[in-house]
Amino acid sequence: MEKNKNTNEKKKLGVAELACYGIGNCIGSGIFVSMGSGIAFTGHSITLALVAANLVVLFAYAYKTLMAGMFVLPGGAYSQAALLQPPLLVGVTALSTIFTGLAFAMYAVSIVEYASTVFPGIADYGQLIAFAIITLFFLTTLLGGKFMGKFNLIMVAVLIVSLLVYIATGLPRVDYATVVPHEGYFTDGAVGFIMAIAMMAFACQGATMPVAMTADTRDAKRSLPKAILIASGVITVVYCLIAIVSAGVLPIEEVAGKNLGVVAREIFPYPVFVIFILGGACFAIATSLYGAVASVQHPLLATIEDGWLPSVLGTKTKKGYPWVMMLILYVIAVVPIWIDMGLNELISLMMIPTMIINLFNNVLMFRLIKKYPNAWENGFFRMPRWAFDVTIILAVLCDLLISVALLTTLKPGDQYFILVMVAVLFAYSYYRLKAGKVNLQDIERIRREAEAAARASGEKQ
Image (cartoon, rainbow, N blue to C red):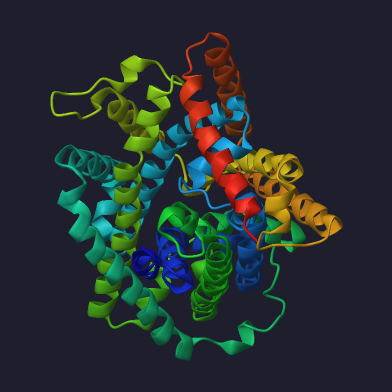
């Protein structure tokens, strides 16, 4: 029996595998989408902004990392939410999944922008092509996940190779006088630097993704925090190298607000440039689009089944496809394309609700360590209470920094829209709870399971 237990433990994931998972989930479309915007805000100091952005994001999601070091929760992030959040916030978190539809639009628009650097003629039909891309990827969900799974793996591999080639080819072409601080740094002052941090935070999310693998992790309370910290460090280094190339090869005014294709055209022979754009940039964004479309079904179905949304939205075809729900997501995805919403606006509309929810989660950590003192004392991040308080205060400030900075990038109408939408999420969750439409028994069952796991984690020395 003991032999089988040891064998099963060896088959579980260790720090290296978990760190790779976090790195793979982070390095991708985000850097292709947002690098030009970051450079536009702060010029050559984009490298410093990326270092700061990774640190800010690490704090913004502090509750995830701290909880991973306290408890072994097989349900990962879902169990973390059940243990940490009151029912109202559970509902808000569940309903916020609808903002994923905005990500679909952003990815489709970005694919068109990159492809147009190779085929300039398609720029005149950008909206129509983005619409077609969204439609194609939604149609693949009708065929099931296995249809695109192998192709997705190929795209990920090509993406990683493309970025490595971009770095290796670009570094010798960099004017290193631009790397050290000079007049090209902080082009829009402190405000621009903060805006760049907030914008690049979108690309830095993902390092905490190993939490989803808790059930398959060996010595989870130690392995997960280590993996998250290592992944964040590696991502910082890789992103900084990409930033040095992106901001150091051409004059800053030629790359500010532009995608990486501008620099790629300069450093690559034309055939390699085409491969980089189509096989690297477009594949990177396509993997994110496919992953978002494919993965959103189950969380939204769970939201409907738990009663946070009307049951009619979960209506399925005879083969089990939730067509009503997916149709609504499809509409949410295509509307921003037809109204010509920009990438900065889409990033802001997606990030702000997430950071607001993170803010509440980080504040709730005060209550959690009071409720489970043994788990905290026996956890990975043992620290004096004052140090914990400082950590959470910094986490809340980071959530606020990203939210407020991104809010200022929006037009007044969009600002009101996002604030109203967040208020609606809270109000609607409150209504569903008070109306008795939410399956509280299921939430309480998950909470009890998480609490049992938490107590077990706290008792282990």
